[in-house]
Length: 474
Ligand code: PLP
Image (cartoon, rainbow, N blue to C red):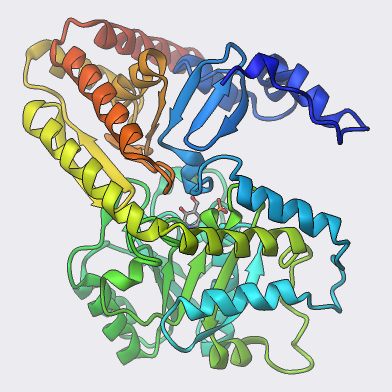
């Protein structure tokens, strides 16, 4: 794709698109000045400071026209690939139709239809939907509804979990790193070890827990729930009258090779939380889905009917993007495709694991996969690994992530304070694209096999730079 010669769209009388296109190479300066300068610094350190100017399908394009294969998709929000033409057309025709929006006393049919279609794809009884703009807001809604419906104060989540960064969900996040400096958080929130039913039962025994919230596959380090854990947790929750909440913000809508990850087991949760992919890659939209009885117990009286609302929650463009997304997934068989392409990637990654000592584990489901790394056994490699750990936990995977991006134009992501590289390619991934990814990874791993290679030297430099910045700051 020759990006430089792309025509500027004509429907741009106010010059907004023209300016965004012509100032693409100014984006990072603007971000550093007016948005988030420390994140820009981080992007610069790892060489991710590209001026992307356009995106289509599985690829982003920078100002030089170089293509980047996107195995991150904004943590899965561009699940249909970037700028999906079908969803884009639906959005344009919704705008063109002049539908009513932004009126809190009005329900557009779009919201009802999207709720109906989500409900039809979930276990029966999950038929009451509250739409929000973000996943965090959907989590927050479930926290409130669960408390109100049970009249119980406590909420339990899992160690290493992630549920969003606004104050409510943050109180559930099972990783202190995200919480530091933001306390005091919401009272009554506690964590239990992920995968441990005994601890969960101990936590629920007092019958004062409104809800237990859990991700079917923890997104932070791509950790699937151990077999039987979610079913066991559901049973314990039922026994103690605690509502069982599945956070499928990341795993939902085909990502794991099923419409919802709950279909991998016999699960009938009281709440399912959906986000990210529901956007079609365009609009902020998420949803809390629960049972009518729970919804009504929480806010189902005339006096309480307006106490939990959200201005943009069911705006027409978000609703249309959600509906278009469901229809594209259905029409193009993307759930089955994700399962098939997930198996291709998984097998390829297992093959690499067998050949490269640095690959410790490959795990996940469908197109949500994690590659856990470990230090190779040579002395220099172990020394370098320790240096990186001391500089910053979670730095080590950049040994692979940086050259994948720099040398092969492949975007992946280190998953946080751990040694895991996370893969969330679009559900539309082709077999050729999966093959290109595996080839690129093979080549980077081959280079990293040799502890004197260029990539190790780059990482030691980054680690030393990080350590010296830290010592200057302290
Ligand atoms: N829940 C899970 C499992 C997530 O992965 C995320 C985001 O990464 C959220 C909730 C929060 O979603 P959002 O960033 O849209 O607020």
